[in-house]
Image 1: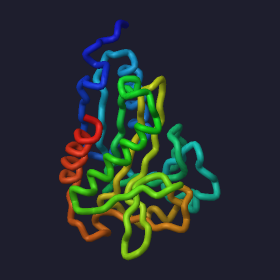
Image 2: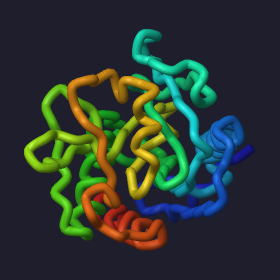
Image 3: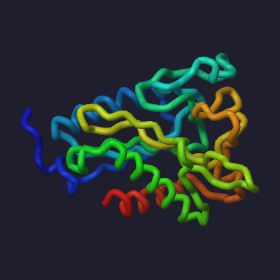
Length: 218
């Protein structure tokens, strides 16, 4: 099938999809893989997909079995994304990003840094200072003098098309993180916008994500 040049390149359109009902994890992965193949073929636009999952744990390529503290608490899915164990569930906005990296310099590290900037700029719209931490993946905030993780990043790249992406804690049940060592780091806390005292709706977050994405990715 001949590639459609209208769907390729840095200035090509990006489709936004928002699912408000929770999406099962296997279904989401299947849809992403199909979309990645279509983007590679140039038959469909690049895409950012915002959704929530039912409560579950995912294990990235660096996950250690010892970090799954409560194996029977929620379903566990092994995934090809980078990283350790993480939790997904209601009240957490997941952003799956499917972009053609060939049109963006074919630089995976730069892409991950852009994802970090995207989250930082999104949080800034709620007057929250999100920061990187040397040697730690994700975005962190200072909560009363304690480093707490508010957003996670885990990506996969197939023939220069990205998938998986980010998750931002809006108002999840934070005790659900207790069943794992989040991202392999036991000495730090986990927080959310609600935990920081911000009554932010998921719709508010979606608007902020879309505005910040345009700022970072163009």
